Image: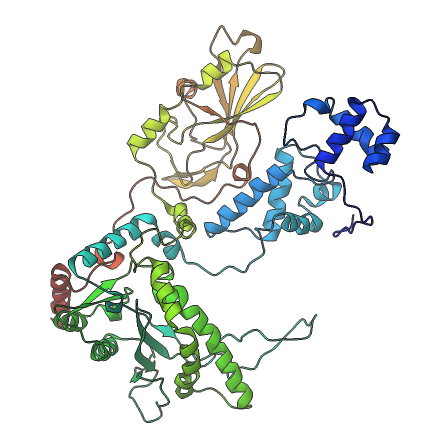
Length: 602
């Protein structure tokens, strides 16, 4: 079948109401199929087909869909495709998205597990086809193929609700202690401004496999730029740090108000940041009665003792952001540096076109940054940055929940009290299911077993979380089998290497005598495995379970979402201050910083 079908007839297909009216005329009014076909324009064969589905058109409930909701050749139903799209979005939000190849393999397994007929080509290649993938994206417009941005595990775990709520609590205390207006709340952050940037998009010949754009070198030399902005939407000039030992006369053509600084690495240092802070203080008149609040990240160059002393003496309150959260909590990163880098790429492209055969040097960087700064650092963009982070006006719910989804992978387990409460919330047990529920032959029943399921006395530690999804299948001989749905745990032994085993627990019972006696448990395991977490019979039969209805596999059952197994609280770091947001100019922090400074001077 073609991928894009163009209907040959100009007349649109009949609606559900038109079909129902036509069937009513045949069934109730007694008109012939030919007469109704002439009146309604619906073919006779179509009327015969729908009359077999709708026996009593007069008593059809309102809003009932008569026409099929999907094509008869479509493999997955709309319900299954919605489950699949929800799963893909959740995986993407957790920063573990699936590629098209992995998705097609998942879809094939998803169809096989749910006993959905698939084309022979799928069975041969053990994966879904290209045509299905193309049409799947067309039917689900909220999905698209995107190139992801690399996100470190530290950023994924660092941006969570607990950390951000503590941060907003600190801001609230500062706002209550001092009267800060939008003109007194600042943000400063460095950004790399190299001599070679990623080229901007250009217009090229359609179908070209390789499109090139001239740059001055293979790799660029970095120049650090540090600007300051306030919540009122105003830009305050900062500094440019050149990769040189001393400031020279070539460091000119600076944007208005910016200072040239030098360091062999081209990166920010404590001494250079102190100069930048003094430069900001010269532009902003702050007093003890009217201090300013400066938000910045936890880079070591921002937390020197000399910086804190100068800020304390000149009414500059330094507040650090939570570590590894600047992509969500830094105003400059949220709404300003993205447009700035795009405009900077255009400036480099224009310069290369006007100076063919020449190379961009570090001394040309400030000149190329001027138009990009004017276009990106607008009042609207700056104000939106403070609003998007929830800093001003203060809004703890400003960051969307989708940005916290990646931290779910490393979330700590629930407290024992909540686990015990969930254990007692359901009265059904496996024994009561077998003895009292009408189980048919060759029937498979999905059940949930709590994660705190008690295993055998052997003290075996597993890398994966305990399995909570099991299948209870009944054979025609009355044999019940309890099998984990997902992959078996990886067992770790102290004196031997790790090994894997799929645990398959079988409950043997006479299906005809279920009401009279309790079933017994028998477990089979390979002889090569010395120890394995085998559930006790009495614990298995008394463990509360919960029915999963309707009985069907979800994408989560076939390919579980990534989740780190947490057996307890994380090991705290030796220096907790480096892993939290704090006010550097507060008396306790100043005392700690002074102690560290004195130790280094010894």
